[in-house]
Length: 279
Image (cartoon, rainbow, N blue to C red; front, side):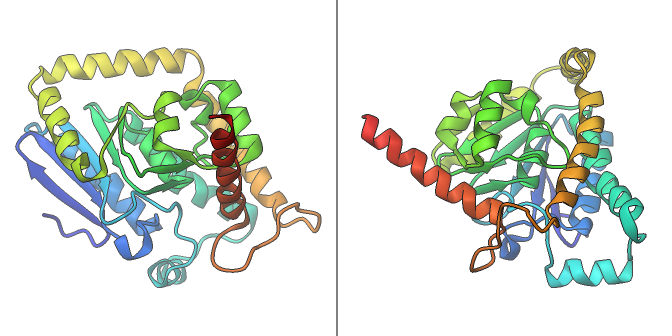
């Protein structure tokens, strides 16, 4: 166990279990959670006994995305206010989303994301930083033009455009068909299946695993992966600033959902209706 407040750190044999531990907030990612998760990844990377790292979420959902205003997040922002204006917004976004997520992608050990329930926006970001994504059959993914914009690398560009232009959820079955999810398992067997696979990986030589991961990541970097992440972050900042424009197309719906999430639910339901009619 660990002394983190929003992340749980455990060791099972040669496997480090990193658990997002805010089930009451659907594991929303506060600045504190990101900082603790960053430390936990580093801790597992430096532990010579650890050969595989598993990332999971406590409760019904992997992650509902960024924390937009829980009491803990509000208190932290008051205690550690960011610089005003665009400079502060950019720096905070970079420090929370780009730097740590790239570090997690490049951790020198195999990483596995175990996803159940919602994996929305920033949930997709941290799942995509892992080498393997194993999903429960109830997993629901929602990509968009978020800060760490890995989607064009996670999906074929035309598939990415089709989903992002429409703005809709992707269920576990479709995510597997799109090759974002490695495979899907029954919800009640998610932990067991993930740990069995992690155990098989952990039996291999850790240096060989490190070289395999480095070679594959370098292949992506040679095609421009990291440079794209840097550049897309600036485009995200421009896009998010535009949401404040008076002619922004989406309006806040009744309830707590953000406009894009509400629209994504509606479009997913429409797709299910179309699939039903075609069968």
